[in-house]
Length: 284
Length: 341
Image (tube, rainbow over all chains, first blue to last red; front, side):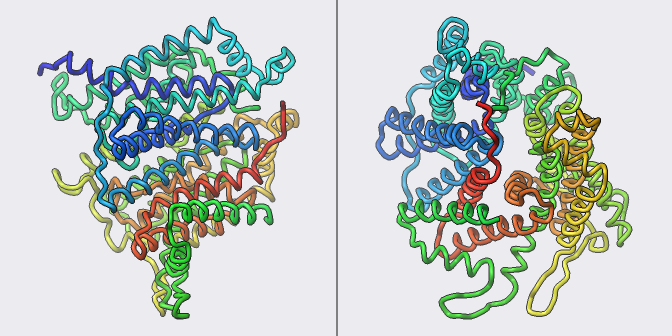
C-alpha cells in the first residue's frame, strides 16, 4: 500500500486548522480561568452564519463577518452566565451547545424547506490555513511578552490575587471571552469553507477534540497547536486507511476516530506530563 | 420551587419572543404542543386518547434514569457528563447478555440489567479514578469516554456483534422472552415498567442520601469538601464512589432502554439522552425525586416539538433551544455561587 503523503499533508492542514483555531479559543478562555466546553456550539453558530449569509449575499467576507459575530454573541452569553450570574462554567457551556445546535438546525431546515440555495463560494483555503498557523505563534508571543498575556495568565492563576495587584479580573475575563468568540468564529468559518454548505450538527464533536488538544498541549499554545494538527493528521490518515491493511491487519476506522479521545484520557491521568491546568480554572 | 417555576416561565417567554420575531404563529405552536403531549385538542374540546401521554412517558423513561445518574454524582459535587457513554455500553452489554448468554424471563432481565449496571460502572471508572487520584477534571474525562463509547460500540455492532455481515450496523433483535415488554391498558394507555424501576431507584437514592451515614458523607463532600475532609471523611473515596454509582445507574438506564424499548443495539440507540440528562438533573434541584417532573418536562418538550414539526412544519430542533434556555435560566436562579471576587 502506498500513501500519497503530499495529499495527507494537505488534508492534515485542512482538517487540523479548525481544531487548532478552536483550541486557541479554548486556551485563551481557560488561561483566564474560565472553563469552556461551549466551543462546539460557537463553531457551529459561526459555520451556520458564514454559510447562510455567504449563500444569501454571494459575499463570503460578509458571511465570515456574520459567522464570527454569531460566535462572539455566544461567547458573550457565556461571559454573562459565568461572570455576571456566576453559574457553573460547565452548565453554561452545555446550554450554549444545546441552544446553538437548536437554532442552527432550525434555520437550516427552514432554508431547505423554502428551497433556498445554500451553496456558496468560499475564500481560498490557504488563507484560513495561514491563520491557523499564525494564531498559536502570535498567542505564544502575546502570552509571554505583552501586558494582555501576563494579565490573562495572572487572572487564570488567581483572580483575587490579581485584583490585589491592581488587575481587574472581571475586565480581563470579558476581554478573553471576546477573543474566544473571534477565534472560535474563524474556526467555524474555516470548517464550513470546505464543504461550502452548512450541515446540521456539522461540527460533530470537533469542539471537544479541540478541548482535548488543549489538555494534551498542557494549556500552552505551541504544544496545543501541535496536538490539534496531530489530531487532524490522524483524521486525514483514517480517511485514507479505510479498508486498507496496515502491518497485515485491517484496523477498524473507529479505532482511529477514538484515538484522540483515548490519548487525552491518558494525558489527563497524568501519565504523559505534569498537569499545568490554570489554578483558578472554573473556581471563581 | 417558585424561582424555578419563574425561570421556566422566563425560558418559555424568551422562546416565544424569538418565535414571534421569526414570524411563527405562536397560537398554532401552543396548540400542537398541547395536542402532542396530552391528547387534548383545545380547538374541538376533544380527548383523542392516551397515546400522546404514553409517548411522553416512554421518552421520559431513559431521561429519568440518566437524570438520576447525573444527580447522584452532582450531590457529591461531581459532574458526570458521561451518562451518554455509560448508557450506550450498558445497553450493548445487556444486548450481548440476551443474545449470547441466552438469558430469558424475569431472572434473565434482572441479570442483564445488573450486567448493564456493571458495564456503566466500569465505563465511569477511569473518570472516577482520574478525578479522585490524578486530579483531572471529570467533565473532560467523561466527555472523552463518551466519544470512546460511541466509537467502540459502533465498532462492535458493525463487526463482532453485527446482525448480518455487510448489513446495517446493529445487533440482532433480542427475543420476546428476554425483553421487558410495555403493559397496555384500556384506552391505549401504555406503561413502561422501566419507568417504575426508575421511580423506585430515585426513592432508594433519596433514602440512601438522607438516612444513611455513607449518604450523609456523600452530600457533605458535595456541599463542602474541605469541611468534609476536616470532619474525617475520606473525600477522595467518596467522590470515586459517587461517579461509580452514577455510572452504574446510567448503565441500568441503558440496559432497561434496550430490554424495554429498543430491543437491539444500533448506532441510533440514544438520540442524546445522556446529554439531556444533565439538564434534567439540574432542573430537579437537590432532590432525587425531582428528576421525575424534570424528565417529564424534557420528554414533553421533545414530544411537543415532534408534533409541531408534523402539524405546522416547525423544525423540531426548537426543542434543543428550549432545553438550553431552561438550563441557563434555571442555573441563573438556582445554581449561582457566592462571589469570591
